[in-house]
Length: 413
Image (cartoon, rainbow, N blue to C red; front, side):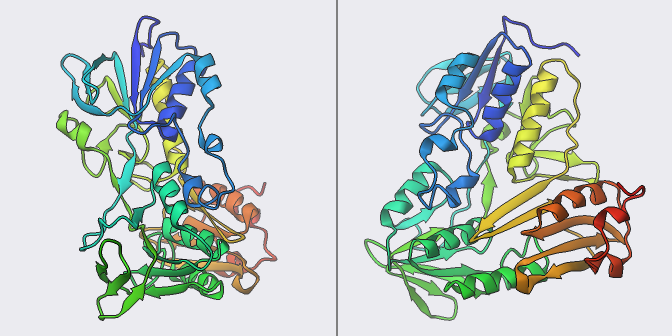
């Protein structure tokens, strides 16, 4: 492979963890040309996971969100254009049209545009006290409305919604969580884990309702009530919507790149154009372990794909084959997940949920394909090995805490 030369320019569109990581990795690997990150927000590359956790709670500063501080960017020679949007990509001329009216040329392009919050398609969702929770500006606006005794209605029982609910409880607010499906975290966990987290939130005072269809938001000029499909209404001082995300692929699609639930990339994180790479929430890759294409929404995926893209840009042949993992902090509990549980046909519980410390192993055709660990970091770390080795354990032994997990490995470690 031929790597970059010192007279070339790499432009990175997007200033999340994928964009920031890719820029720093290029610098670390010795690229002496121009690295330019274009951000449509007014911030240098920053981390999103703390937004619904410590930043919302007021426990993390703005500066702590940055992937790297401005001084480090300056020292690395990485330029950031903030508050500027890329309107179009001219692949023939390798040029970007910017919202400022400028044109920016590139030799290699990396698209890390991430994703945006999925809007709630009901009347009233555009009211000033209705918020998404996706970026710094969103959380700053939400925090201005929060306070002891305020009524917050959170629509969506996924990670974002439940994390925000845990923070709102801590802030002394009256919290309602509405989930349209029959259980929370339904897309990513087994019923056992869902039931545990539902109990945790209800015990904390959250009015958590599943199978709750939101049909409207009443009030003018601000929402005062959330209307449900059964006709009931819930009082609200503010509403937070967390019903999933939409990958930002419109720019790539308009440029003629192959898009299918994300920008389609190969094992080296290259798009259908060999001079354009993609990484993070907006990218769709082939996972060799699970044998299918997928688009992952995780920090691990964003950073590992960014590193893979940087390697290949530098002429270092690298394949993206990282094991997916995720985490969520709610109250004093840490949920750590490894692997993709979709398609599992059996589940084994290890530990006691009454003690708020247990693991759920997902099996398919007898082999472990994923696991959830609630406040069990050792199980989480060992499960990475069990999954990679496609271990087929005895289920009774797997559930027995007296049997060490490492004993299931082909050669006990």
